[in-house]
Length: 117
Length: 113
Image (cartoon, rainbow over the protein chains, first blue to last red):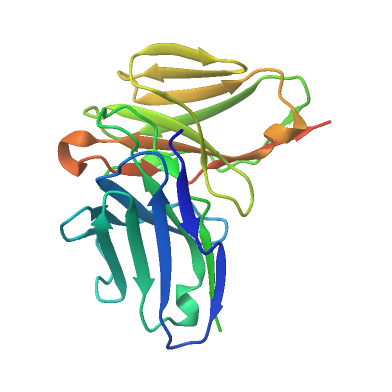
């Protein structure tokens, strides 16, 4: 149980275009999902907290107009990288909390490798 | 800014030995602590979590938490080459940050056969 599916697993796009990444909780409802970014040989950096039915909460330094998050249902959150540039190339990972109890472990999606050329 | 600190390593241990991974955190109000394993190019996978002082064992893994010292560790017994990965310590501070996880930089573990 507690499976998070993320698509696509990798994507190459041209500079200036937009890319949408989907994160789905397959066997549980996730009122909250989290989006992380990881550059090579670095740790995960939280970008934003996605809340079902309301606006996402962005971490300091993350451009909300560039990284659009939509959490329209209890099982789906999307991250859209708008007007992507080579510096946006990174590994993007979503995670969800499969339960209301605070001490449950977070389940991660398989990640999306974005390369902007 | 709250911090989670780990030695980046690499930590090298021979096959069959005990690997000891350490993590310190900067706030006494922290609630839950997680250990994740991440293979190169893959997303993290949860090994275990702990929220009470003391030890928690799961198979070859033991998590140890000392809130007074703000210290959490992970012991891997009978280390195998397949354990070679980056181990991420993560802390959740509910009081100020809701349910967000904050990760350490990770420790690279190499198990040599």
